[in-house]
Image: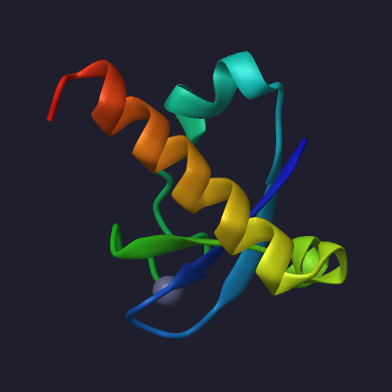
Amino acid sequence: MIYEFKCEACNHEFEIQCMVSEYDKYKKQSCPKCKSKKVNRVITPVSISFGRGFFKDGYDSAKNLTSNQNGE
Ligand SMILES: [Zn+2]
C-alpha cells in the first residue's frame, strides 16, 4: 500500500509505502522536509472513479444497518 500524506506546515506532500498492518507505525509520520508532525493523510481521488453516488449509498446503508443492530 502507498499512503499519501500532506504536511500542514509547509504543504509538502510525500508518500509512505508500507504494509496495511504496519500503517499504525507510519501514520504518525513527521514531515521529511520541515519535521512538523502536523501531517494529514491524503486520500487519493482514485475511489471517485467508482462514482460518488455509489460510495454515499453504501455508506448510508451500512450506517442504517448498524443503527438497527444497536436497536436505536
Ligand atoms: Zn512540512
